[in-house]
Amino acid sequence: MEPIVYTINEMAVEDRPRERLARNGASSLSPEELLAILLRVGMEGQNAVQLAGNILRERKSLLGLYRTSYQELCLIKGIGPAKAAQLLAAMELGRRIATEDKKENYVIHGPQDIFYLLEYSMLAAEQEELWVVILNTRNVVLDYLKLYSGSVNSSQIRLGEVFRGAVRYNATSIIVAHNHPSGDPTPSAEDIALTRALIQAGRMLDIEVLDHVVIGHKKFVSLKDKGYAFST
Image (cartoon, rainbow, N blue to C red; front, top):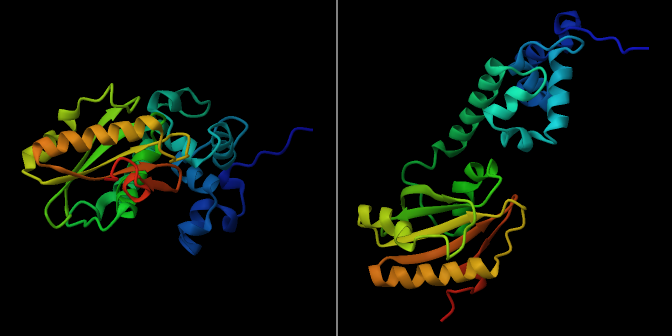
């Protein structure tokens, strides 16, 4: 027998996602229910909550959904251009909220601050990205930007490009960071070689490379703390 499919309006009022959100707050809802509110309507044979559950299973997780492009979203059954745009807009708002308090006067005390600064921006990356954080003499962030996307190694990266922003700001130090999409932040031999090359180039420009932080899933490794490339 086919399972009975109820529309949201046919659910008991106290069970409807929007009503539960208004009564108990957004944190009381499951990921499927939150996603259903964004979708608003389901499709033939599925209400919005059921459709949301199917989407999350197809993308493996919320993180998988976050990493899905607009074009890929439009290809998922039950999501067209309008719903795809709504989902991406909501996720981008979440990303901006997560980074908004780090825009001004954000001080770097250690590698954990680099992790907090960049983790959310790197979550969506399915390939390696190299970021540069530009600091003033008090270790306040002047700017941070993504320079490379793809293979991060010394043979592919133009070292001068890494320091261009620091030269523009007349900064004396930078921190570089990149992600490992596998989730394991253990530095590779290429990571260490790149760090050595950057340190040497920085000395020629009188710009100190304070650290190289490798970011994985909910964890990070500081090459300086580990003594890789920074050892005398």
